Length: 427
Image 1 (cartoon, one colour):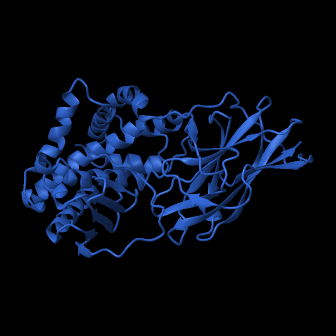
Image 2 (tube, one colour):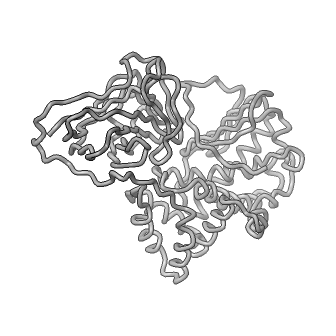
Image 3 (cartoon, helix red, strand yellow):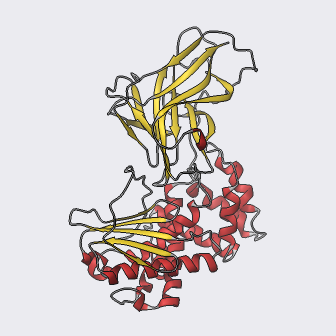
């Protein structure tokens, strides 16, 4: 069994007090249902992995990593991260923490794999221009290397039941790469391995830092990403690597046939306004969509010449007291969910706590393309357990509300209609 992280959003606003806590210099393990020795082994591995990731590879690592461990018979065995500094491990019995030969679960490797995600996501906060194979392949590759580094530093006894876990490191990855039927994640891990060799030990950290500062158009990510990658090294093999790797690592969001939009000159919209709404204005619940967004399809009023001037969302921010220093995105899409325009807004527009209507005014109105009978408004907040927005919905799904991201918005939201509205004005 291979650990691959799933980035999820914790919807609860609080958590139960842990039964016990184990601490190292930079790791806190909150655990319930496993032994102190097992919790200590998780903490020691996380500590050693953090050290090598920061000192050897130069990654931005958390000052403190928190590992929350739950052991219950009805748990589904899982390990995931919030992408910042917190891991969640769920097991069914203490036996799930035994070496893989007995348990079938790669917990030690998993702790190193998760640090790979954290090293990337802390710096490249908006990474939806990478494929799932790219994201998981990166964590698989660097996690495998870190396993070997942990063994070199700590040896077999770092785990509560000592064993030679080097079989979970680069030895295993290299065997997987030699297989004729290697899956997409493994192939992506091999591509990251090749790139790391060209850029040097701390080269990936430098690359991530540059990509984290780069605005990437998800409909054409290569335009922004390629010059950054090729600028990281003079190695003549880098261009050939890019040609081979980019189709596997970059995710291109389909553009709508209505891709060309125009904006109305300032002050030139003097016609009537129209508020598009599918909801009835009464909240029946709220949700935060991990790995997705909240979308509503609207009919365009007759008459033509309409422009989108603002978007209204009924919701409230959760997580840390201070809003994250990043943008969320509102997408104007066609009825099939293909992107027409991407409009970023600051997270600070949403207050933490109780929901209210928040009006997001566009700096420049967007013309609704001629010939479009419907449009979709999609809000995506890239949430984690520590930051996000609860978007509310009403009780009856009378409209066309969906979940997903541009290019993949086919999942109907059956609980009701999202409380997302668009304000149009005619020229």
